[in-house]
Structures are given as structure tokens and as C-alpha cells.
Picture 1 (cartoon, rainbow, N blue to C red):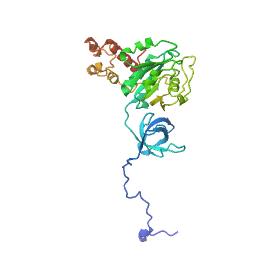
Picture 2 (picture 1 turned 180 degrees about the horizontal axis):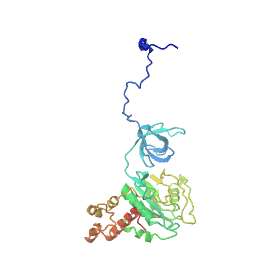
Picture 3 (picture 1 turned 135 degrees about the horizontal axis):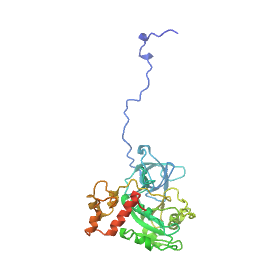
Picture 4 (picture 1 turned 180 degrees about the vertical axis):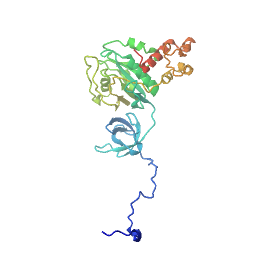
Length: 334
């Protein structure tokens, strides 16, 4: 084969590799002015079920739009949808926007886990479901849920179940100074007070397995069809809810059932965030030494919160309650 003389080539002999084009890629994103507002009611393997705001009975399956990247979207989030929002079988819409959250329920796997998990968004209140017996109430878990409420912008409500097995008086007395609303239930009676608490509000339920949480949901939303489990012989129930799901209430509002939890880590919460929920101590806490955990002597000898009680500006019982929550957050509660 003869060697080509490169000096005799002209432009017709040159092979030009196609470029990416001269048109610059725009960073502008569609405004999606026709997007439909909705609320996320369940999440499953990269698909979100969303109740359309204009018609809560219409539930649409949606995927996350590419422009959202890895934006976390959880049950309770208010989103904007485009595409096929008819809700017909085999249709798929796109989530193109997530509205700012009013509240958020967060937890970590334990107190050393640096990764926080958002359980529910935009709930107005959290019903902390606790059985009075079988299994016995766990005040440490209740305290941790209270901390999560105070730091996440939710109103806590104690929901005490199985009152036919034990009296609630002792447990309620230990939370009297926190002025937490409560409702007491039993399996053999209707509880209109519970309906009143849930009416026209977005409420999340959280509790250990076996405390009767799913039974409560089935009572207020009969068509939910949630399974209920029996408590095992060692006092630990089986997980009957495997993921959070929001259900519309016949009386108006939503109830969000969450999976049964064995732990409620608070690694993401600081002591100052807990103290902020107690206005009578919040200002004084700013005078404490840096890194003060506000637990008082001997753990925090320089804590000034005791001075607030001594001056009569706050009740000792309130400080005891605050420090109990702080100890629970720090993992030093008994």
C-alpha cells in the first residue's frame, strides 16, 4: 500500500469528529405552572403514592423528577405533580417540587448513629402510643419521643392503651408538669375523645410493637385493613406495620401509621434544642459554660438552671422533667 502524501490533502480529505454543538446547555428549569399539589401517603421502592389535594380520594403513583436529584421525599411531604395525575392503573406522574416542611419527625438508629432519618413530614401532632400493661410502659421511649416533638415542631399527645389491664394514674402523674395532652383507651370501649383529638388534623402515631397502635388505626379507619399482632411471650410484639402510610379519616384529617420501633435514637439533637422547649430555662441556659449538658451536678457542675429554680422563676418539678429528657437524649437514663 502506497504511503499517502499528507502535503497533497485538502479539506475534503479531512474527517472531522462531530462536536457537542455550539448551543450552550441551559440551566433553566421548567416552571411547571400547571403542577398539581398533592400529599405523599406512602413510599415503596422508588415510587411515591400521592393524594391529590383537590380530590384526596384520588391517589396517584409518581416518580421523582430528575431535576430533584436525591431530594428526600417522605410520607406527609407536600409535593407538586405533573404528567398523568388521573390515578388510573399503569399511569405514572412526576414529582417536580417539594414544599417547605412545617414540622419533621426525625430519629437515628441509636445515639451513636450520625445519620438521621426523617420518619414523617408536616404532621401537626404525634400520638405516642404506650400500653399500660402487656407490654409495660417504657418511660425512656416516651421521653425520647417528647424530645423529638419539641425539636421537630410537633404537638405531643400521650395515647395510653389497654386501660382494662392497668390504671393510667401513675404514668400520667409523671408527665403532669409537662402538661402533655393525653387520651386513654381500652379495647372493649369506643373512645370518642380519640376521634376529637384526630379530627381535621394530620396526626402521626408512633410506638413500640405490640402496644396496640395498628388496632387503634383499624378502629378509626375501619377500611384500613391493617394487620394486628399478638404480643410475644417475652413482651415484644411483632412488627405489623412495615412502612409509614397516611390514611384519610372519615371525620376529616389524616392519620399516619408508622412501623413499630424498638429504639428512638437522638444523636442529631443538641441539649440546647431540648432546653429551648422550656421557655423559663432557655434564657438562663445561655449563661451556662460551653458544652454544658444542663444535667446539673456532678455531670455539669457549672449549670445555672438550678439558679432559676432557686429564684422562684420556675418550678423544681419542671427542671426535673427537663433533665430527665436531657438524660434520655444523652443515653444516660436508667
